[in-house]
Image 1 (cartoon, one colour):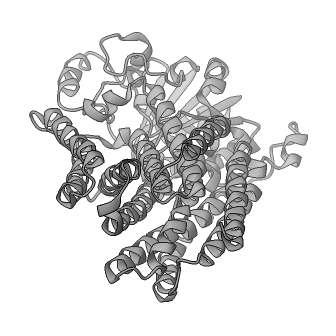
Image 2 (cartoon, helix red, strand yellow; image 1 turned 30 degrees about the vertical axis):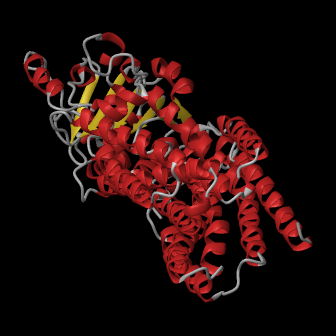
Length: 114
Length: 462
């Protein structure tokens, strides 16, 4: 039986979600998607119980697949979010400091590719 | 509630707070990384806490599945290139929805005879949206990975078929709420939802994928929230709601950026046959000015300000690193280089930002549409790399155009425009782009990456 408390939780969480996520700049929309993906891996809490409760073998196997799928999202999701966020860097300060002296000798190649 | 359960609930609460703080940290790129690492800690806590659940009596399935998930998830996290991000995100929606659906099926199998209506409603919603998201996300993945055609697949009566299927699925769902003990209907509904996922994404073209991927994100979230209702787990409800809210907000933003409603994206099959026919005729009396890499390089090297406008073409050509190299060279000559990012440039929200960040472009050089549009008037050169519809002035001026009203980057207002383009083929929407014929526009034909490489060597030679 679902209690009214759970509806409260849902509505309030959705409200918090809207408030928090409207503040995410478009710059970080891709990391946002991968972050929510990683967080949605929390369905593991349901899948783990299913896989370990030993109700019958069908349940075990359904749980097995669910745990696998959810943990792919957890592991892959958090790793890729971190990998992306690591790339977002602010401009190094010295470059801004001296606008007059920007023309340098050719031959110094920018390390553009990685 | 036993002491053990109380501890587990406390851990779940802590995890929920960490997740919300993690998402909050994404409001600023400097704090985001730490915040998400804390969210990951919350996830580890929640998983460890769950393992103490008294219902769990055997760990062999759990251990193997966790290891398998890690083995598959690790490369998906560490080695997928940034250009493949849209399909990577799409497939992860599939995994998330799959987990939710399977938990729903298992719950139904055990409790179907004595299931309260409210639980059945939650379960039904869970498997309906879960199953639809599984196949829908797989289709989106296929289209983005291009083993399924990226073009809209349409046929006569398609919308009628889809709406009918959806109606039947909803009817089965409602029936189940009143008669939970009818497994035939339950499994029938899942089969229908799986089919519906395929049919829904089939008519949607590649350029509309940002909306679809966001929408599927939202569905996956709602499905896992419903799981939380069904198994009475608050952390699931909270995370599902966060996920759902995020996906929903993103899809609204994306639709807005295309000046289209949800309905139009889902049922519109944009850019199919008609507009392309009209396009050819009017283009004949217009001339295109082609430019050599040398002249384009001179134009940019002696400019005061250059605004780079990347589009999906840059992602396809994987040209982001060369873009950065060119920008570095220009900056050394004293040119100000900025990047203008349209919200729907690319195949998912924020696609261009990630690619440019990967190429070490500092994020304070990346400007959103509203911030950069007034700047174009002052810019000497707008360098358009593989973008088309998002810079088409017809969206402002031509009420007949299918993209009329869509907010665009005002590239045509800058003093000079250089467009890197493979050929004169119209863009995704099949609409002629008058920007290409404007007197201040010059076209540099060729693959974006090789054109940029030529530009780099020309600028160096100056």
